[in-house]
Structure formats: structure tokens, C-alpha cells
Image (tube, rainbow, N blue to C red):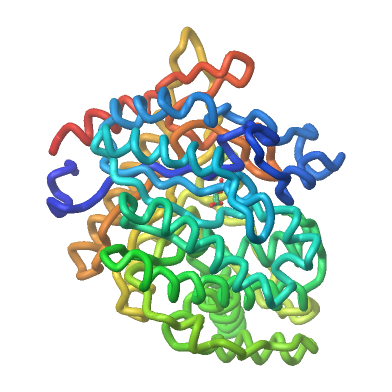
Length: 438
Ligand SMILES: N#[N+]C[C@@H]1[C@@H](O)[C@H](O)[C@@H](O)[C@@H]2O[C@H]12
């Protein structure tokens, strides 16, 4: 497989997120985020690590852009830190806007197309203190914030993603409690997800007025859910979990309603489902972003609240314990495209590996094999009719992996956190050759 096997206008990119790489957590007027608070709370993050410095990208962005350029990527997906550009619900932080203006200008200077993610989980603390995603007003606060970004960057940035993985923001942040703000309440998760989707819709509405020549979408967790065994019960719970994990975040945007089986099981467990603003939530988008990593095997378990248990699979696994399952990418690309008939980008795909550095080298052949097999499945999906427009690797450099701290390395570039030196792994060198094959 070669780069030229993909369509001529197909985009290969690399992705990051503000809290995971920027550092400078309290510099130049940036106010706290819920992740600053959460990571400073003992016991929340492995080894009690935090994003105070991370990859120091705030000061090293020019060096990092040079690496992106040298590897040969067409595009770079990054997120804006809401608390870095807004001091409160009304006042902008000019120094924060300046940082992103310089970043965007440097990308364009290097002929790298910027893709902006408006929200990648670092909610300003001043909003959390007003109820955060539980407060219905947040959808309009998000519209105001989005509009400021569109007005400041929309002249140069034409590809926008409103939210990254609302499933994580709502279910990991408000139900499982392993992400900020660390709540454990299913009703709150369902409520926050609805407000996240409302915020998405209001942002799309503003975008249509402010960036008329731009494209906007949303990025969702997209996991292949499969029955552990070929029994009717396992097939049923696989359908249910697919609706809860995937459909719950896709269906409202295209169909203006939540998937019925998941809805029924939630209501049967006494959970209130929200319907307001479905006309806003389903404002027409230009693409879906798919974040694909692995599959989830589920087993019928009537004793469980949602009648299923997740089963550990037998396939080779990454350092996250996720099975390496490239076929699942093909399956989900076909499924999502055929169900929603909306253009797609793979906005994240990659793996955490047992990366060891020796004499400045990291021999991550496993990551090269991972990327090759997923590229092949993406290409197969294109050949089978999927309007797939691009593929962003997660991630540029090792960075702050949320609750895992710095223990998990997803980068194609190795980050030495003591020196902040970057080292191209073998996977980056392989990618450089692959991308040169234009
Ligand atoms: N875990 N993991 C890796 C990666 C995470 O680092 C990103 O921030 C998320 O968008 C998504 O979960 C995927």
C-alpha cells in the first residue's frame, strides 16, 4: 500500500489537544480549567501527575510545527483551550488569542492545513462553578465562545470540529468519574450529553453566519461493539451498547432523536431523557470525525443494570489494554457512512506502545504495523464507497494521557519530559517515507 493509492485530495494529518500538550497552565492570563483542578486533586491521576507543563508546547510550538512539516503531514488537528482565550463568559484574553494566531500563521506558512477542535474537555472552572455542562445556559456560552474563535480565526481556518468525544465528557466525566469533573451520576451524564449536543448545534448555527466558506463537524468516539458469543442475548446487548456508545451521539445530529433501544433501557432504569432543542442539535453538518481505537466485546448479564458485561478479548493488545482490531475500523466506517450519509474524517487513530528510547531511537515496529493495518482498512472502505476525506494519527508526540498521566505513550514522536527534547520514533520515520510517496 502506498500513499498514492489514496485519493489525490485525501488528507493525512496528526492530532493533539490543548490540555495534553500546551502546559503554561497559569501563564499569560489563562484561567483554571476543570482539568487543572482535577489533576491537582490527589489520587485522580496516575502518579499524581498533571498538565501544568505537559510538552511545554505553548513555548515550543514552532519546533513542533517544524516536526509536523518534516514528517510531511498535510494537516494538523489541535484544540483551543477555552480558559486560555476567555477570562470569563464575556471577556477575551488577548494573549491567549495571540498564541493561537501565531500557531495558525506558522502552520499556514508551512503549508499545513489547520483543523481546530473547539472543545477537547478543558472546560473553564468559572463555567463549572455555574453548573458546567449541567447548566442549560452553557449551550449559549459555548456559542459565544465559538463565535469569538470564528471571528478571530475563521479568515484562515476553514475546518472546524465543535466537540471532541462528547461520550467521554459526559460518561467518563459525569458517570464513571475517571475524568474531570469526576462525578458519578448517570442522570447527570445523560443531561450533560444533551447539553453538549445542544452546544454543538448552537455553534454550528453561529458558524454558518461567521465562516461561510468553512466546513464544520463533530468528533465522536467510534468503537466496534461485538457480541462475545453468537447467542441472541449477546447480539441484543451488543446492539444496545452500540446505541449507548455510538448511536447516542450520532443519531440526534442526523435524525433529531436518540436511539430507541438505549432510550428504553435508560428510561426503564428511571433516567429522564431530554428532547429540547433537537432542531438545533440536528443543524446540518459537513462531516463527522471518527475516533477509532478498538472494539468492545459484550456479554449478556441480566444481573447488571444494563444487562451486559464487557469481556476481555483474545487479540494482541496495546499498553491501554485495547485489542488491536483494524477490521473494526473498516466495519465502523461502512456502518457510520451508510447510516448517516455524511462525509467522514478519521480524526484519531493510534496506539499506546511500550516505547523505550535507546541512543535517541525508539524502535516502535508495533506502531508501524498498527498504522499500516489501519491505513489498509481505511483504503478498503474508500474503495467500498465511503466518502472518507482524511486520516489524523493520534498523536504527534507523547503527552498527558488524562487519568493515565504520562504513563502511556501514543506519540509518533518520543517526548523526554525532563529535557522536553523530542525524538522521532521509527514510526515517524516510516510515515515520512510513506507520505513522501505522493
Ligand atoms: N485514551 N486515549 C487516547 C486518546 C486521547 O488521548 C484523546 O484525547 C481522546 O480524544 C481519545 O481518547 C483517545
